[in-house]
Image 1: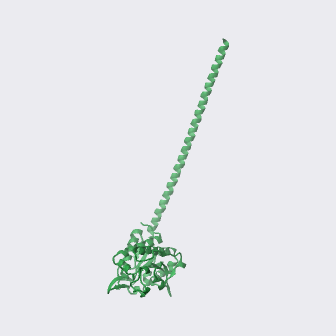
Image 2: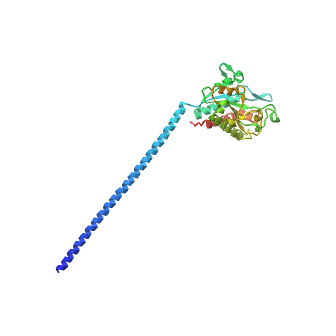
Length: 326
């Protein structure tokens, strides 16, 4: 009997010890679970902190970039691009007659293009534009019309002193009875934009970019308007690629336009370009198309052409000088 009681007591003791062990184990497991949960929570917090830090750095970088852009805009506003545009010739110069009536005048039409171009450059790109004339007459340093189209023509280019670019706007013509047809009834195949650059522009990567871009833009425009058979323009990469202007090339049919140069005994052959060179300004003459082509004269008369060419010129200038719309 005594032995049974002892066995029962021992069994109870073992049961109690076992239960205590289980409870201890459970407590240890709970502690470990809590520690693991805390560890995971800390990892989550650390990951969140890293994420927030990355987002903060990204935000700071974006703010820095935006600030740099704003600073660039301020700099551009402080030093705006200045371009001198010369509407070629003067009123009633280089008139074309049909049946005894004037149907086209280069001196009048270039002013129309110049005014349209000035408006676009100023309003769209914030460029400061100076026109050598704003009416049919031109006056510089006391000289007028004929003098500024002959002996004193270099003053037109010199008017660009201190500016970034000089552009003289023109329409082209050919030799008498070129291509075996009437002088003023040339085929549309003769039309090609020719951009003649001065010695300063020949050394300027930006100026040649402008010349290339204007020529390319005009070629596309002329083909679209149906006054040319060529929609491509032969661009140049440097002064060694520039074509020497000749009458043969000028009057050729179905040839691409390109950037040209023409030298004289005193440097640049053309006085306006020589004048721009005198004041160290890159300059160019833009021969948009041939006023000896009847269809070109018709488009000029109905008002279509001036705006089209002004848009093409502006596009070329903006691309070449990397101007952004305001």
